[in-house]
Structure formats: C-alpha cells, structure tokens
Length: 261
Image 1 (tube, rainbow, N blue to C red):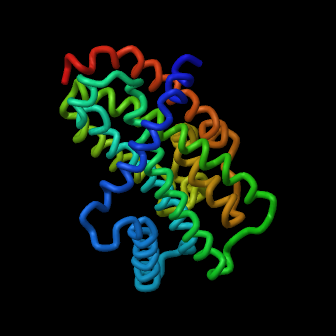
Image 2 (tube, helix red, strand yellow; image 1 turned 135 degrees about the vertical axis):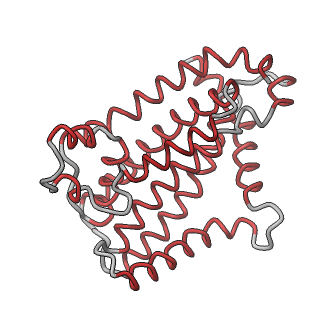
C-alpha cells in the first residue's frame, strides 16, 4: 500500500514519463503519433498478403490477435531494459519511487496496444469474425491480466539490466524461444490435439501464461474455444505471481541503483 501511495503521489511525474515515452518512439518522424495506428495497420496488411500467398490455415483475425498480444509483451520487455539503466542522471539526482520508470514504459506500450486492438476490432468486423456475445465482456480482464504480467516482467528485466549488462541479449534469446512455445501463429489446439506430444509436455506447455492469455483473446474477440483448466489457471495466477516477484525484487534492489549506475 505504501508503494501504491507513493506512485499516486507522483502521478504527474508518471503521466509526464508516459507521454515522453510515447513521443520519443516517433520523435523526428513526419507523421509522429499517427504511427501508433499506422504500425499495426501495416502489420495487418503484411500478414494479409502473407496468408493469401501461403494459404495459411489460420484465419487472419485470429493470427493478428496472437501477434499483437505478443508484440505488446516484447515491447514491454525490450523497453524495460533501459528503463532504469538508461536514466542514470535521473536516478542519482532526483528522489522518486524508482518503480515509476518501468511502469511508465509498460503504460506507454499499453496505449499503443489499445490502439492496435481498435484496428483489430475493425478488421474482425470486416472479416465477419467479431463475436458479439458475452465473451467480449471478458476482454478488459484479459488485457488487465497481460498488463499485470508485462509489468511484473518489466520490473524484473529493468532491475536485472542494472546489474547484468548481458540482460538485453539473454532476454532476446528467451523471447525467441518463448515465441515458438506460445500459440502466436497457431491455435492452442494445434498442440493439445497433437497425439505425438506426450501428456507431460502438454501439461508443461499449458503452464505457459501466454498460451492461456492469447487463447483468451481469441475467445473473447473471435468467439474461439477457451483454454483448458490448467492453461486458464496459469493465465490467471501467473500475472499476479510474476508481479509480486517483480515488486519484491525491485524494492529490495532499487536503493542500490544509484551506486550501480
């Protein structure tokens, strides 16, 4: 509660950092913040062409739901690498809750992600794939779960990058492997219905939080099948657990950031 109170007390600083992160991403470009909409739009066009030529068996809106969710995760992890280590003067000279730095990067990426979801909605409507049922009401909870998960990862990564300069390379390798172990470009049942995959591997795969989260996006937006109990439990419990670990690690190490930088 004290940490939450500190963040609320510095909400103006947090808002300033979020706005700064949004501006820096497209600083110097002619279209500026318009790229927030243009980037996912171009991504959708590229994947549409990709699917048309290769006759990909997965519907485009379902594929984009996974790609956009994954992009949100990777951007949060990538930006958090320099969230603290990239601001040595600010950390050394100004007192404020250091957690604001990684939090501002995740919030900025959340803004970009929400704009991407608006375009995905429009695309799903045009493709006749948008589900107008009660499952759509689940979407805010899924976004909140991924936000919490990304924030926990951002705290861990931003803290680690202060002490270990190889964090950037380690995170890159992990994300690459994690991508193929998550149902980003294929549906979850591609793995769960595969008889060649042993039962123990299926249970291990279901423990991947992104497997459940991505499947829940597809269920909420396109009315696809919900994940199994284990994947659903992992998607619900892992974000809170990762955030708790991230906050604990960050609070324990943040007093030494100025000395390390």
